[in-house]
Length: 183
Image 1: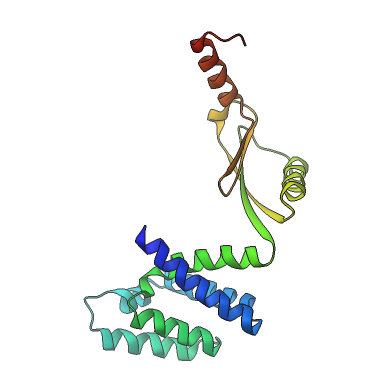
Image 2: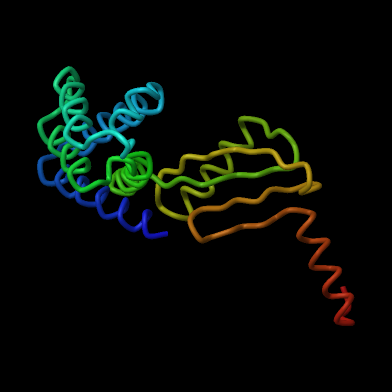
């Protein structure tokens, strides 16, 4: 949990810089590229994050790679700061938080849509539009299938959950019957 708080702080700091200089989207792309590079090149990731290697050597490797990349001076400084503070290993989480914060800045929200069966593109679009209308934000939907729902859909956005699944309706009926309520 502490790592998430730390990562959120670094992501917020970078976003504040991006808001001030109008480069928030550029920093997002650059950060995504760095995260992708580290995930793709395991040897590079180990050379930079593994504490078994001497810190000065790891920093030289990072600085050499940064020099070859076409990234802004702010991102170069940010990556070196992460390294100096011992937070370079959190870059995945920082990138995740940064994307969420940058989306919020642009008025975009992410929601998940879970259904028992495959939904048509038209149905998915109708759900997306309904959520957009309800929240006043542009919605990006992550669609999943879960046959255990039996039927219906469950939509989650942040802390909000709209559960229209048959599974939940059956569980609610079961609880009502247990309490002796009429259904």
